[in-house]
Length: 325
Image (cartoon, rainbow, N blue to C red):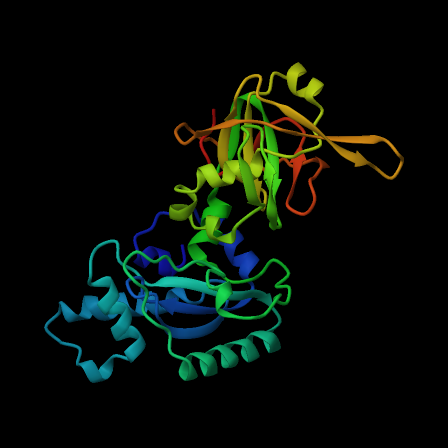
């Protein structure tokens, strides 16, 4: 197991870490103070190189227990900061933010230099006690209407990547309706849902990748997942499907019970062949307790509403990061 996770006493399967390393390849990262949200180190690496820093800090702490004391001048500011964070408590450790990954070596050198210049020029304000720092959580700060594509390798917490790859194979006793949430869209005029309420936004919010935030956002995820989809209700009935799972990047993120008899249908014009298009929505109940066991993701698209996701055929398998019924 790489030194970083050994040092932090986290139990992560070596096969999971190997897959994360393969995914990272060349990358640029930041070490961030978990209490203030302020970065204190920028680095570049290949695979899980950043683990060396925490291992180095722990080694220095171990030496401090011996008769030969380590003077402050012998420790780098980086190691001193890591030691200070880890001394706050048994669960305290630096946050590792992956800024870009899957890069070419020429790219990650330039990206590292640009990020260092930026952080040495513009101060980062410590976060408030009730504030969460999440990927792309300050988009309103810029007037940019768009950002360049990161090819799926944009800013994320390393913990999020590990959680995704550690997600067990979902094994259920009943078929599931898998609903993949991707892009998001605003609906200024509102869209009536199966329960009669209006929603003004649908899709996937990247802040839900952070498990602590996602677990408090199941109702909002359910609102995105509960409509409007091109679904064969005869098949839903025939397969006796009573649950739906919200899926993002091949991993189930939330699980819902479909309220019996709650399906609503609306006409949505015609397709290119002139055939009438209908979409369906359902009322839901959040399921936040249950058990998971583990497989590979099963996602077979059958259709999608404009811009924010797709539905999948009923399935009893899939990578899980949510309770199973």
